[in-house]
Image 1 (cartoon, one colour):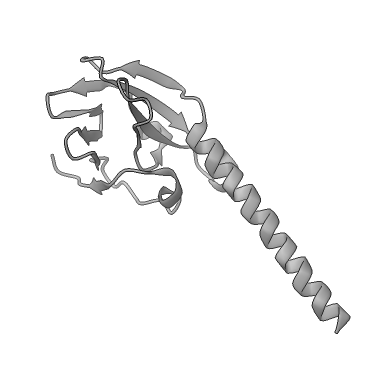
Image 2: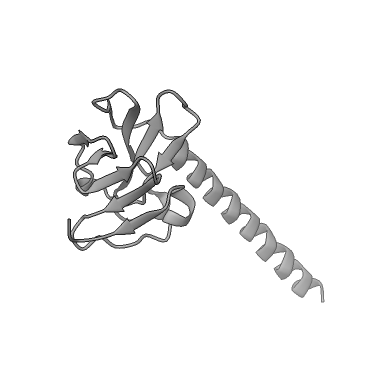
Length: 138
């Protein structure tokens, strides 16, 4: 009986530690400084390339963080992608802003990923805060 109780408490303690470490990972990924940053042509958006801390990933991932300059609390995070795929060559039209392979629709507040063979990452549930769709055609 004591062994069973000890096993249950040990398991619960390990789960709490894992959950805490995981939440710290997510928080650091969301608030991490960008590796590349620039302003959109209109000056309305700041675009940041943010690399994800590697503890739970086996490859290097990154996401695009878009911040409205006039309303800094409005931050849009794209889904994760291979860090090498996030090319920070910016563009802006009256309806869109983004970088190569990734478009943000201003009025709809959503991303479109056009990276060939892009695959969903389970961490997007925690990292991306903006609706997105994947499409290989443009």
